[in-house]
Image (cartoon, rainbow, N blue to C red; front, side):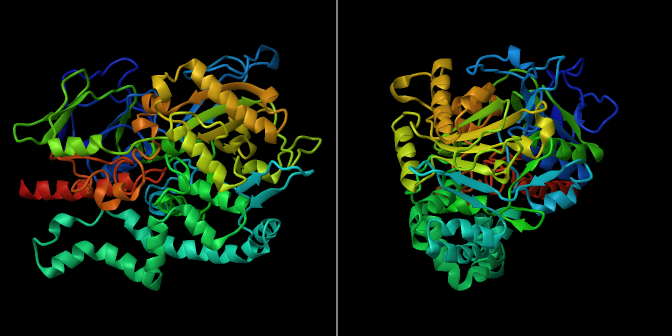
Length: 582
């Protein structure tokens, strides 16, 4: 969130000791100043992006983060210490904070978000993130789906950027699907190319419609018209993808369940929805919009974990002069006599009054989250029945992939969703298992690995009002580990420590509303014109001078940076207008 054009800091701000010290790319210790042109509340990746653009344009900008670490959900944290095997805690070990030890290097996790693809290409270039230390590790192959079946060895589906090899893998299950897959990729690519420009600008301003000339109205709608023209005769198909259940779309293209379930994971990941839920197709589109090194739809790891991305953005901002502080919680926004946001207070205080309609709409947002993230330290690579490890236990191609478990068919995903919709954690959850230390060995002690488990479905509120206490967390994690054990015997014995983050944990630690990784569902009623609410989609809040620049604004969630960049454009436009008026 951005507060104020010419924003001051309230009298309660801390400016001494370890609190209030400037971070990122500075050899000097800066103190919090009394006045800035703009204050960014929260140093998530979008906030850092906004700060970088504002400071680059000449606005004196401060970023205030309440946690001890920058990045919001894009952080790297050492949460399991490196210790000799004999001293390893039992498998139910639940570290709840960053741990550091004087012994061997510990296990460093991308504790929340864990893969990169969606970050807008303009941000890479304009903020010179590579110069500021960002290094991305592409994955190829990128997807591995082992099966549980009564044959030895079980089959698996390995997918990568080599189309011929991917078709060969798909042909194990269906020759027809192998032939259809390239056409499906082209179809999805066309849809993405048409709507891609909509991500890099504020939504069309509907307030301009009917208030000016026809030319002004057309100018306001021009981005949408461009997208429609680019789609051309494909517009009805695009509409179907947006509105239909993804199961219907995939049934049109394919017949083999392992392929359909693997593709469907991108349509439901992070969403409290089933493959049979209408509108689930857009979430799939959202996840194939990105690119890495010119490869559309590619996902990769950030060297050093996701926190290294946030640090690179922070360095870009600090290089231009932005002041970035941790352990600085903003309690309220100060308003002037004219109702304009003019500062923030760094101590407890009352909340500002907002229009009732806005408050009601925000309260009605669907922020349900199905996600429990489990970070695991292991002393060896998992060996899958469908692709056993070699004797030297060196990584194999599938170890660098997103490994999809319990994805033999879309019916399993629907069953897992149904259980959570009734308040019960899934008994056979959808699991995306990643091992970033395969490509980035420095994340773990020698011979060991870090494992990211992105699992669903788990409800925010358990049936019967039961709490998500340690017993409930461990019971669900044990269910997840039992599932992994069925695919990769020996996994449970390899576990050194684990960090279990249920939806309430994700909300409490990272500020994700309801634990939702997108800061609000990506359903059609919460996109574009209506994100976060109708009439508030242009990043300007009901309070003049207060702007929304996080994933709750257009174009939504994921480590994309577009909301931060777009919001900065709006702020700069308003700042220039304000300066001209003065």
